Image (cartoon, one colour):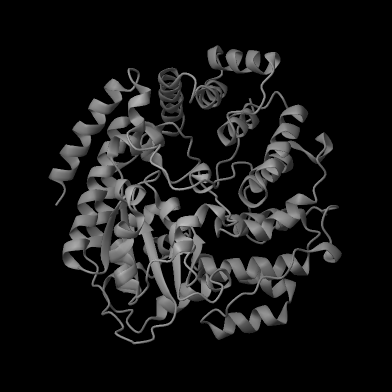
Length: 498
Protein backbone atom coordinates (compact mmCIF):
# COMPACT_ATOMS: atom_id res chain seq x y z
CA UNK A 1 0.00 0.00 0.00
CA UNK A 2 1.24 3.49 -0.87
CA UNK A 3 2.49 5.43 2.16
CA UNK A 4 2.20 9.19 2.60
CA UNK A 5 5.34 11.21 3.22
CA UNK A 6 4.78 12.78 6.63
CA UNK A 7 6.16 16.28 6.34
CA UNK A 8 3.50 18.22 8.22
CA UNK A 9 -0.06 18.08 9.45
CA UNK A 10 -1.27 17.41 5.90
CA UNK A 11 0.48 14.14 5.05
CA UNK A 12 0.29 14.21 1.27
CA UNK A 13 2.38 17.31 0.64
CA UNK A 14 5.17 16.37 -1.76
CA UNK A 15 8.64 16.74 -0.33
CA UNK A 16 10.07 20.05 -1.48
CA UNK A 17 13.54 20.52 -2.88
CA UNK A 18 15.46 23.82 -2.48
CA UNK A 19 15.62 25.56 -5.83
CA UNK A 20 12.77 23.46 -7.23
CA UNK A 21 14.79 21.61 -9.93
CA UNK A 22 11.75 19.59 -11.07
CA UNK A 23 9.22 22.02 -12.52
CA UNK A 24 5.80 21.13 -13.86
CA UNK A 25 3.29 23.55 -15.31
CA UNK A 26 0.13 23.93 -13.30
CA UNK A 27 -3.02 24.20 -15.40
CA UNK A 28 -5.22 25.11 -12.40
CA UNK A 29 -3.62 28.38 -11.26
CA UNK A 30 -2.43 31.35 -13.29
CA UNK A 31 -1.64 35.01 -12.67
CA UNK A 32 -5.27 35.86 -13.42
CA UNK A 33 -6.62 33.89 -10.45
CA UNK A 34 -3.96 34.22 -7.78
CA UNK A 35 -5.21 34.39 -4.18
CA UNK A 36 -5.55 37.90 -2.73
CA UNK A 37 -2.25 39.45 -1.62
CA UNK A 38 -1.37 39.12 2.05
CA UNK A 39 -0.91 42.30 4.09
CA UNK A 40 2.54 41.39 5.31
CA UNK A 41 4.31 43.45 7.95
CA UNK A 42 7.89 44.34 7.13
CA UNK A 43 10.64 41.93 8.11
CA UNK A 44 13.22 43.59 10.41
CA UNK A 45 15.90 42.96 7.77
CA UNK A 46 15.69 45.81 5.20
CA UNK A 47 17.82 43.85 2.72
CA UNK A 48 15.19 41.13 2.61
CA UNK A 49 12.46 43.69 2.01
CA UNK A 50 14.49 45.16 -0.85
CA UNK A 51 14.86 41.70 -2.38
CA UNK A 52 11.12 41.08 -2.10
CA UNK A 53 10.32 44.44 -3.67
CA UNK A 54 12.39 43.61 -6.77
CA UNK A 55 10.28 40.46 -7.32
CA UNK A 56 13.01 38.87 -9.43
CA UNK A 57 12.34 35.10 -9.63
CA UNK A 58 15.99 34.14 -10.05
CA UNK A 59 17.04 36.16 -7.00
CA UNK A 60 14.16 34.79 -4.96
CA UNK A 61 15.04 31.19 -5.84
CA UNK A 62 18.65 31.87 -4.91
CA UNK A 63 17.52 33.37 -1.59
CA UNK A 64 15.82 30.11 -0.62
CA UNK A 65 19.26 28.47 -0.62
CA UNK A 66 20.62 31.13 1.77
CA UNK A 67 21.23 29.59 5.23
CA UNK A 68 19.82 32.69 6.91
CA UNK A 69 16.56 32.45 4.99
CA UNK A 70 16.31 28.70 5.56
CA UNK A 71 16.69 29.26 9.32
CA UNK A 72 14.26 32.20 9.46
CA UNK A 73 10.74 30.84 9.05
CA UNK A 74 9.24 34.30 8.49
CA UNK A 75 11.81 35.20 5.83
CA UNK A 76 11.26 31.85 4.11
CA UNK A 77 7.50 32.36 4.16
CA UNK A 78 7.83 35.80 2.56
CA UNK A 79 10.24 34.59 -0.13
CA UNK A 80 8.06 31.62 -1.08
CA UNK A 81 4.99 33.85 -1.25
CA UNK A 82 6.75 36.38 -3.48
CA UNK A 83 8.12 33.64 -5.73
CA UNK A 84 4.74 31.93 -6.09
CA UNK A 85 3.14 35.19 -7.16
CA UNK A 86 5.84 35.58 -9.81
CA UNK A 87 5.22 32.09 -11.22
CA UNK A 88 1.85 30.62 -10.13
CA UNK A 89 1.99 28.08 -12.94
CA UNK A 90 4.84 26.14 -11.31
CA UNK A 91 3.07 23.15 -9.75
CA UNK A 92 5.81 22.24 -7.29
CA UNK A 93 6.09 25.86 -6.23
CA UNK A 94 2.34 25.95 -5.60
CA UNK A 95 2.64 22.93 -3.30
CA UNK A 96 5.51 24.61 -1.45
CA UNK A 97 3.45 27.80 -1.08
CA UNK A 98 0.47 25.85 0.26
CA UNK A 99 2.75 24.09 2.71
CA UNK A 100 4.12 27.39 4.01
CA UNK A 101 0.65 28.93 4.31
CA UNK A 102 -0.71 26.00 6.29
CA UNK A 103 2.31 25.55 8.54
CA UNK A 104 2.15 29.27 9.37
CA UNK A 105 -1.57 28.99 10.17
CA UNK A 106 -2.88 30.88 7.17
CA UNK A 107 -5.54 28.47 5.87
CA UNK A 108 -7.68 31.38 4.68
CA UNK A 109 -4.93 32.22 2.18
CA UNK A 110 -4.69 28.61 0.99
CA UNK A 111 -8.42 28.00 0.63
CA UNK A 112 -9.03 30.09 -2.55
CA UNK A 113 -6.32 28.06 -4.31
CA UNK A 114 -7.50 24.57 -3.38
CA UNK A 115 -11.16 25.58 -3.73
CA UNK A 116 -10.65 25.95 -7.49
CA UNK A 117 -9.38 22.43 -7.96
CA UNK A 118 -12.08 20.36 -9.71
CA UNK A 119 -13.86 17.88 -7.45
CA UNK A 120 -13.32 14.96 -9.81
CA UNK A 121 -11.13 11.82 -9.80
CA UNK A 122 -8.96 13.32 -12.53
CA UNK A 123 -7.75 15.96 -10.08
CA UNK A 124 -5.84 13.23 -8.27
CA UNK A 125 -5.94 11.83 -4.77
CA UNK A 126 -3.34 14.15 -3.26
CA UNK A 127 -5.15 17.32 -4.35
CA UNK A 128 -8.61 16.11 -3.35
CA UNK A 129 -7.23 14.94 -0.01
CA UNK A 130 -5.53 18.25 0.72
CA UNK A 131 -8.56 20.27 -0.41
CA UNK A 132 -10.81 18.38 2.00
CA UNK A 133 -8.44 19.03 4.90
CA UNK A 134 -8.11 22.74 4.10
CA UNK A 135 -11.91 22.97 3.81
CA UNK A 136 -12.13 21.40 7.26
CA UNK A 137 -10.19 24.37 8.64
CA UNK A 138 -11.20 27.31 6.47
CA UNK A 139 -14.63 26.55 4.96
CA UNK A 140 -18.11 25.88 6.37
CA UNK A 141 -18.46 22.44 7.89
CA UNK A 142 -20.89 21.32 5.19
CA UNK A 143 -18.36 22.14 2.48
CA UNK A 144 -15.72 20.03 4.20
CA UNK A 145 -18.18 17.13 4.58
CA UNK A 146 -19.04 17.27 0.87
CA UNK A 147 -15.38 17.24 -0.07
CA UNK A 148 -14.63 14.24 2.12
CA UNK A 149 -17.60 12.41 0.60
CA UNK A 150 -16.32 13.22 -2.90
CA UNK A 151 -12.88 11.96 -1.88
CA UNK A 152 -14.29 8.67 -0.59
CA UNK A 153 -16.43 8.17 -3.68
CA UNK A 154 -13.47 8.80 -6.00
CA UNK A 155 -10.90 6.82 -3.99
CA UNK A 156 -12.71 4.27 -1.80
CA UNK A 157 -9.61 2.10 -1.67
CA UNK A 158 -7.42 4.70 0.11
CA UNK A 159 -7.39 4.01 3.84
CA UNK A 160 -6.02 7.47 4.67
CA UNK A 161 -9.13 9.04 3.16
CA UNK A 162 -11.36 6.98 5.44
CA UNK A 163 -9.28 7.73 8.51
CA UNK A 164 -9.25 11.52 8.02
CA UNK A 165 -12.89 11.70 6.93
CA UNK A 166 -14.18 9.79 9.96
CA UNK A 167 -11.85 11.66 12.28
CA UNK A 168 -13.44 14.86 10.97
CA UNK A 169 -17.00 13.57 11.28
CA UNK A 170 -17.76 10.12 12.72
CA UNK A 171 -21.32 10.67 11.50
CA UNK A 172 -20.39 10.60 7.82
CA UNK A 173 -22.47 7.87 6.15
CA UNK A 174 -20.58 4.60 5.71
CA UNK A 175 -22.32 2.02 3.53
CA UNK A 176 -21.92 -1.75 3.73
CA UNK A 177 -19.02 -1.83 1.29
CA UNK A 178 -17.23 0.85 3.31
CA UNK A 179 -17.62 -1.12 6.54
CA UNK A 180 -16.35 -4.24 4.79
CA UNK A 181 -13.26 -2.34 3.61
CA UNK A 182 -12.54 -1.06 7.13
CA UNK A 183 -13.01 -4.53 8.62
CA UNK A 184 -10.75 -6.09 5.99
CA UNK A 185 -8.00 -3.54 6.58
CA UNK A 186 -8.25 -3.89 10.36
CA UNK A 187 -7.81 -7.66 10.20
CA UNK A 188 -5.50 -7.76 7.18
CA UNK A 189 -1.73 -8.27 6.88
CA UNK A 190 -0.82 -4.68 5.89
CA UNK A 191 0.25 -3.04 9.16
CA UNK A 192 -0.16 0.52 7.86
CA UNK A 193 -3.68 -0.12 6.56
CA UNK A 194 -4.56 -1.87 9.81
CA UNK A 195 -3.30 1.13 11.82
CA UNK A 196 -5.28 3.72 9.89
CA UNK A 197 -8.42 1.58 9.70
CA UNK A 198 -8.28 1.00 13.45
CA UNK A 199 -8.16 4.77 13.99
CA UNK A 200 -11.11 5.17 11.60
CA UNK A 201 -13.20 2.52 13.33
CA UNK A 202 -12.30 4.01 16.70
CA UNK A 203 -13.76 7.33 15.53
CA UNK A 204 -16.93 5.59 14.35
CA UNK A 205 -17.48 3.94 17.73
CA UNK A 206 -16.51 6.90 19.95
CA UNK A 207 -20.09 7.58 21.08
CA UNK A 208 -21.89 4.26 20.64
CA UNK A 209 -19.20 1.95 22.08
CA UNK A 210 -16.51 4.07 23.82
CA UNK A 211 -14.65 1.18 25.47
CA UNK A 212 -14.33 -0.64 22.15
CA UNK A 213 -13.31 2.65 20.55
CA UNK A 214 -10.47 3.05 23.05
CA UNK A 215 -9.30 -0.53 22.51
CA UNK A 216 -9.10 0.12 18.77
CA UNK A 217 -7.15 3.34 19.39
CA UNK A 218 -4.66 1.44 21.55
CA UNK A 219 -4.22 -1.09 18.75
CA UNK A 220 -3.69 1.69 16.21
CA UNK A 221 -1.19 3.54 18.41
CA UNK A 222 0.81 0.36 19.01
CA UNK A 223 1.05 -0.21 15.25
CA UNK A 224 2.03 3.41 14.72
CA UNK A 225 4.77 3.17 17.34
CA UNK A 226 6.12 0.03 15.67
CA UNK A 227 6.17 1.90 12.35
CA UNK A 228 7.82 5.17 13.37
CA UNK A 229 9.72 4.20 16.52
CA UNK A 230 9.69 5.15 20.19
CA UNK A 231 9.59 8.70 21.43
CA UNK A 232 12.91 9.94 22.86
CA UNK A 233 12.34 11.10 26.45
CA UNK A 234 16.05 11.62 27.14
CA UNK A 235 16.29 14.12 24.28
CA UNK A 236 13.41 16.14 25.75
CA UNK A 237 14.93 16.11 29.24
CA UNK A 238 18.18 17.48 27.84
CA UNK A 239 16.35 20.12 25.84
CA UNK A 240 14.39 21.27 28.89
CA UNK A 241 17.58 21.52 30.93
CA UNK A 242 18.93 23.91 28.34
CA UNK A 243 15.72 25.92 28.37
CA UNK A 244 15.90 26.27 32.17
CA UNK A 245 19.32 27.88 31.74
CA UNK A 246 17.76 30.82 29.91
CA UNK A 247 18.31 34.34 31.20
CA UNK A 248 14.92 36.10 30.99
CA UNK A 249 15.00 39.52 29.38
CA UNK A 250 13.76 42.30 31.69
CA UNK A 251 10.14 43.32 31.26
CA UNK A 252 9.98 46.37 29.01
CA UNK A 253 8.12 48.46 31.60
CA UNK A 254 6.71 50.64 28.86
CA UNK A 255 3.32 52.18 29.56
CA UNK A 256 2.47 51.55 25.89
CA UNK A 257 4.36 48.40 24.93
CA UNK A 258 2.54 47.95 21.62
CA UNK A 259 1.14 44.57 20.66
CA UNK A 260 1.67 42.12 23.49
CA UNK A 261 2.26 38.42 22.74
CA UNK A 262 0.51 35.81 24.87
CA UNK A 263 1.61 32.18 24.63
CA UNK A 264 -0.91 29.54 25.70
CA UNK A 265 0.95 26.34 26.52
CA UNK A 266 0.24 22.93 27.99
CA UNK A 267 -0.47 19.41 26.84
CA UNK A 268 -2.30 18.84 23.56
CA UNK A 269 -6.04 18.38 24.16
CA UNK A 270 -5.82 20.36 27.42
CA UNK A 271 -7.99 23.30 26.31
CA UNK A 272 -5.54 25.56 24.49
CA UNK A 273 -7.95 26.02 21.57
CA UNK A 274 -10.87 26.83 23.87
CA UNK A 275 -8.87 29.34 25.91
CA UNK A 276 -7.52 30.97 22.76
CA UNK A 277 -11.02 31.26 21.28
CA UNK A 278 -12.36 32.89 24.44
CA UNK A 279 -9.53 35.41 24.66
CA UNK A 280 -9.73 36.20 20.93
CA UNK A 281 -13.41 37.06 21.33
CA UNK A 282 -12.29 40.11 23.32
CA UNK A 283 -12.30 43.16 21.01
CA UNK A 284 -8.69 44.00 21.89
CA UNK A 285 -7.31 40.49 21.32
CA UNK A 286 -6.59 38.48 18.18
CA UNK A 287 -5.19 35.01 17.64
CA UNK A 288 -2.34 33.80 15.45
CA UNK A 289 -3.32 30.17 15.99
CA UNK A 290 -0.53 27.64 16.45
CA UNK A 291 2.72 29.18 15.25
CA UNK A 292 6.07 27.43 14.92
CA UNK A 293 8.03 30.66 15.36
CA UNK A 294 9.14 30.04 18.94
CA UNK A 295 10.32 26.53 18.05
CA UNK A 296 12.26 28.05 15.15
CA UNK A 297 14.09 30.29 17.62
CA UNK A 298 14.59 27.46 20.09
CA UNK A 299 16.00 25.03 17.52
CA UNK A 300 17.77 27.48 15.22
CA UNK A 301 21.13 29.26 15.14
CA UNK A 302 19.88 32.05 17.45
CA UNK A 303 19.27 29.63 20.34
CA UNK A 304 22.51 30.23 22.25
CA UNK A 305 22.25 34.00 21.88
CA UNK A 306 18.67 34.03 23.13
CA UNK A 307 19.34 31.69 26.06
CA UNK A 308 22.34 33.75 27.20
CA UNK A 309 20.27 36.91 27.51
CA UNK A 310 22.37 38.62 24.83
CA UNK A 311 19.33 39.35 22.67
CA UNK A 312 18.06 42.30 24.71
CA UNK A 313 16.34 45.20 23.02
CA UNK A 314 13.31 43.32 21.82
CA UNK A 315 14.86 42.30 18.48
CA UNK A 316 13.22 38.89 18.44
CA UNK A 317 9.93 40.22 19.76
CA UNK A 318 9.88 42.69 16.85
CA UNK A 319 10.60 39.80 14.48
CA UNK A 320 7.83 37.68 15.97
CA UNK A 321 5.24 40.47 15.90
CA UNK A 322 6.14 41.27 12.29
CA UNK A 323 5.71 37.60 11.40
CA UNK A 324 2.15 37.51 12.78
CA UNK A 325 1.31 41.13 11.98
CA UNK A 326 -1.07 40.28 9.15
CA UNK A 327 -3.06 38.12 11.60
CA UNK A 328 -3.40 40.64 14.44
CA UNK A 329 -6.10 42.95 13.00
CA UNK A 330 -4.75 45.94 14.93
CA UNK A 331 -5.27 44.24 18.30
CA UNK A 332 -3.39 45.10 21.48
CA UNK A 333 -2.80 41.43 22.32
CA UNK A 334 -1.98 38.52 20.02
CA UNK A 335 -2.41 34.93 21.21
CA UNK A 336 -0.23 32.02 20.07
CA UNK A 337 -1.74 28.74 21.22
CA UNK A 338 0.96 26.24 20.25
CA UNK A 339 0.81 23.75 23.17
CA UNK A 340 4.36 22.48 22.64
CA UNK A 341 5.76 25.94 23.36
CA UNK A 342 5.64 24.62 26.94
CA UNK A 343 9.04 23.16 26.06
CA UNK A 344 10.41 26.64 25.28
CA UNK A 345 9.20 28.89 28.10
CA UNK A 346 12.75 29.98 28.86
CA UNK A 347 13.26 30.99 25.23
CA UNK A 348 10.00 32.98 25.34
CA UNK A 349 10.97 34.86 28.50
CA UNK A 350 14.48 35.50 27.18
CA UNK A 351 13.36 36.78 23.77
CA UNK A 352 10.09 38.61 24.39
CA UNK A 353 10.11 41.31 27.09
CA UNK A 354 6.34 41.82 26.91
CA UNK A 355 5.34 38.16 26.72
CA UNK A 356 2.85 36.48 29.03
CA UNK A 357 2.83 32.68 29.24
CA UNK A 358 -0.46 31.03 30.22
CA UNK A 359 -0.36 27.35 31.13
CA UNK A 360 -3.74 25.66 30.84
CA UNK A 361 -3.88 22.46 32.86
CA UNK A 362 -6.55 19.78 32.60
CA UNK A 363 -7.12 16.61 34.59
CA UNK A 364 -4.49 14.23 33.24
CA UNK A 365 -6.70 11.16 32.63
CA UNK A 366 -9.02 13.28 30.46
CA UNK A 367 -6.10 14.75 28.53
CA UNK A 368 -4.36 11.42 28.05
CA UNK A 369 -7.47 9.62 26.85
CA UNK A 370 -8.15 12.35 24.31
CA UNK A 371 -4.54 12.38 23.09
CA UNK A 372 -4.48 8.61 22.67
CA UNK A 373 -7.73 8.57 20.69
CA UNK A 374 -6.31 10.87 18.00
CA UNK A 375 -3.83 10.27 15.22
CA UNK A 376 -1.39 13.18 15.41
CA UNK A 377 0.53 13.60 12.17
CA UNK A 378 3.53 15.31 13.74
CA UNK A 379 4.93 16.84 16.90
CA UNK A 380 3.39 14.44 19.44
CA UNK A 381 5.63 11.40 19.43
CA UNK A 382 4.70 10.75 23.06
CA UNK A 383 1.03 10.14 22.16
CA UNK A 384 1.44 6.46 21.31
CA UNK A 385 1.60 4.94 24.79
CA UNK A 386 0.29 5.65 28.29
CA UNK A 387 3.78 5.58 29.75
CA UNK A 388 5.11 8.15 27.29
CA UNK A 389 2.13 10.47 27.79
CA UNK A 390 2.59 10.23 31.56
CA UNK A 391 6.33 10.86 31.29
CA UNK A 392 5.85 13.85 29.00
CA UNK A 393 3.20 15.32 31.28
CA UNK A 394 5.47 14.85 34.30
CA UNK A 395 8.55 16.55 32.90
CA UNK A 396 6.52 19.39 31.37
CA UNK A 397 4.65 19.96 34.64
CA UNK A 398 7.94 20.28 36.49
CA UNK A 399 9.37 22.55 33.80
CA UNK A 400 6.44 24.94 34.01
CA UNK A 401 6.53 24.92 37.81
CA UNK A 402 10.18 25.98 37.57
CA UNK A 403 9.33 28.98 35.44
CA UNK A 404 6.31 30.00 37.52
CA UNK A 405 8.60 30.18 40.53
CA UNK A 406 11.41 31.92 38.68
CA UNK A 407 9.29 34.41 36.72
CA UNK A 408 6.24 35.15 38.90
CA UNK A 409 3.60 37.17 37.11
CA UNK A 410 4.99 36.26 33.70
CA UNK A 411 3.86 32.62 33.79
CA UNK A 412 0.27 32.06 34.91
CA UNK A 413 -1.86 28.95 35.25
CA UNK A 414 -5.51 28.36 34.33
CA UNK A 415 -7.36 25.14 35.16
CA UNK A 416 -9.56 23.79 32.38
CA UNK A 417 -12.16 22.61 34.87
CA UNK A 418 -12.32 26.06 36.49
CA UNK A 419 -12.55 27.72 33.07
CA UNK A 420 -15.58 25.64 32.11
CA UNK A 421 -17.18 26.22 35.52
CA UNK A 422 -16.72 30.00 35.89
CA UNK A 423 -14.82 31.59 33.00
CA UNK A 424 -14.77 35.22 34.27
CA UNK A 425 -13.27 34.12 37.59
CA UNK A 426 -10.78 31.70 36.03
CA UNK A 427 -9.55 34.31 33.55
CA UNK A 428 -9.42 37.22 35.97
CA UNK A 429 -5.65 36.96 36.71
CA UNK A 430 -4.84 36.71 33.00
CA UNK A 431 -7.03 39.65 32.01
CA UNK A 432 -5.72 41.75 34.89
CA UNK A 433 -2.14 41.09 33.83
CA UNK A 434 -3.03 42.20 30.30
CA UNK A 435 -4.81 45.32 31.49
CA UNK A 436 -8.14 44.04 30.20
CA UNK A 437 -11.56 43.49 31.73
CA UNK A 438 -13.97 40.63 31.11
CA UNK A 439 -16.09 41.31 28.03
CA UNK A 440 -19.47 39.63 27.57
CA UNK A 441 -18.51 38.75 24.00
CA UNK A 442 -15.95 36.31 25.37
CA UNK A 443 -18.78 34.03 26.49
CA UNK A 444 -20.09 34.03 22.92
CA UNK A 445 -16.78 32.89 21.42
CA UNK A 446 -18.54 29.99 19.69
CA UNK A 447 -20.62 32.36 17.54
CA UNK A 448 -17.57 33.89 15.86
CA UNK A 449 -16.30 32.56 12.52
CA UNK A 450 -12.89 31.06 13.11
CA UNK A 451 -10.44 28.69 11.50
CA UNK A 452 -9.59 25.71 13.71
CA UNK A 453 -6.66 23.60 12.54
CA UNK A 454 -6.80 21.16 15.45
CA UNK A 455 -8.89 18.28 16.74
CA UNK A 456 -10.74 20.77 19.00
CA UNK A 457 -13.06 22.13 16.32
CA UNK A 458 -16.24 20.81 17.98
CA UNK A 459 -15.33 22.41 21.32
CA UNK A 460 -15.35 25.94 19.90
CA UNK A 461 -18.45 25.57 17.70
CA UNK A 462 -20.85 25.45 20.67
CA UNK A 463 -21.29 27.23 24.01
CA UNK A 464 -18.98 26.62 26.95
CA UNK A 465 -19.80 23.27 28.56
CA UNK A 466 -18.40 20.64 30.90
CA UNK A 467 -19.12 17.58 28.75
CA UNK A 468 -15.42 16.70 28.57
CA UNK A 469 -14.83 16.84 32.34
CA UNK A 470 -14.36 13.28 33.58
CA UNK A 471 -14.80 11.93 30.05
CA UNK A 472 -12.04 9.34 30.53
CA UNK A 473 -14.42 7.15 32.53
CA UNK A 474 -16.43 6.46 29.37
CA UNK A 475 -13.56 4.37 28.05
CA UNK A 476 -13.52 1.87 30.89
CA UNK A 477 -12.90 -1.01 31.15
CA UNK A 478 -10.59 -0.91 28.10
CA UNK A 479 -8.66 2.06 29.54
CA UNK A 480 -8.00 0.62 33.02
CA UNK A 481 -4.45 -0.58 32.42
CA UNK A 482 -3.70 2.51 30.36
CA UNK A 483 -4.67 4.78 33.25
CA UNK A 484 -2.55 2.87 35.78
CA UNK A 485 0.55 3.16 33.60
CA UNK A 486 -0.19 6.82 32.90
CA UNK A 487 -0.35 7.77 36.56
CA UNK A 488 2.71 5.75 37.53
CA UNK A 489 4.93 7.35 34.87
CA UNK A 490 3.54 10.82 35.47
CA UNK A 491 4.23 10.70 39.20
CA UNK A 492 7.71 9.24 38.72
CA UNK A 493 8.82 11.76 36.08
CA UNK A 494 7.23 14.77 37.77
CA UNK A 495 8.97 14.06 41.06
CA UNK A 496 12.28 12.90 39.55
CA UNK A 497 12.84 15.88 37.23
CA UNK A 498 14.80 18.70 38.77
